[in-house]
Length: 129
Image 1 (tube, helix red, strand yellow):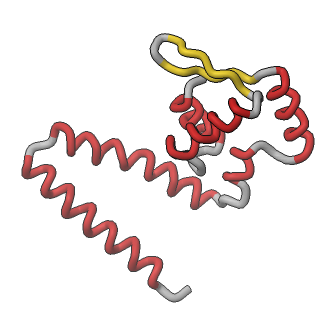
Image 2 (image 1 turned 90 degrees about the vertical axis):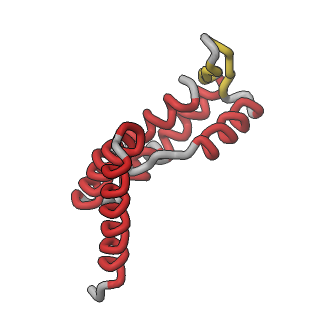
């Protein structure tokens, strides 16, 4: 896989609870390559990474010690939190689409909705439980 595929895969495996940034994935890949655990090769203009024998051995040892990191990221997440992450994933593409192809009026109305939603979300955090 190349780095972006890994980001997508980790997000999918964690049910949306963990989406590492490119700023964390690529330095990690470089470190793993420096340690000889993966090897990177150019393929169709993208750098794809594969586990080496040493990397497979290290992964097998890690798997015996603890759950995979994507399971750890989702650990303790109740249904409401998972549903919230799912809602975010559905929400963001709508905003992007308005930003890309919406009229200036539509973009302004969307911005007003986003501003109001942000304020309401922070108000929820300010509530006493």
